[in-house]
Length: 116
Length: 111
Image (tube, rainbow over all chains, first blue to last red; front, side):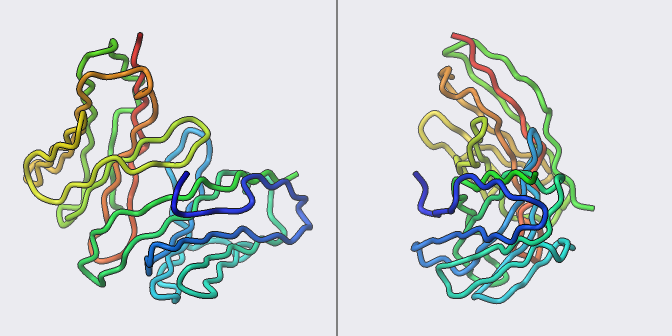
């Protein structure tokens, strides 16, 4: 079990559906991240939120829309996804000490997403 | 383009042996280095973090950092079959809150 909780654990959706992935942490971390991981590949960064503001968007297609309602929650809204978007979506969090931040990121268990 | 390189393996060691995992990185300004273990179908789990040159030990794990040579390694002593997993090296990008991951080394510990 991890201190970063992701729901749902599995999600199957059609290309026309709209769904959301949720992530929650109660460690007081102020930086939160979304990663995408394909089989046998390392995690790829998608978005970074720092103090509830989007600080990094790694040129992610607009069919992925992140949201950070408060310091403990991070959502990823999905719409009109493609089959190649099927992957493990990982949320992570870390303490954020500004520019010299060197704190590790802690990952949730992930949501395994399948697009039909 | 910042790069983190790892041998993909598999690295096969007998139970009880020392497993040595290596990683090189291209960003000379990097200050923070992490090792994650990932079992098949699971999420990455933080094993070690290291920030200064030299060795850092935690139980059976030792991380080694040499910034001049731009490499970081992980030693696992008394390897157990339960250590069989993919080990990801991650380097924090200079100036931003992002990690660059290596492709991972698959470790197999033979009973």
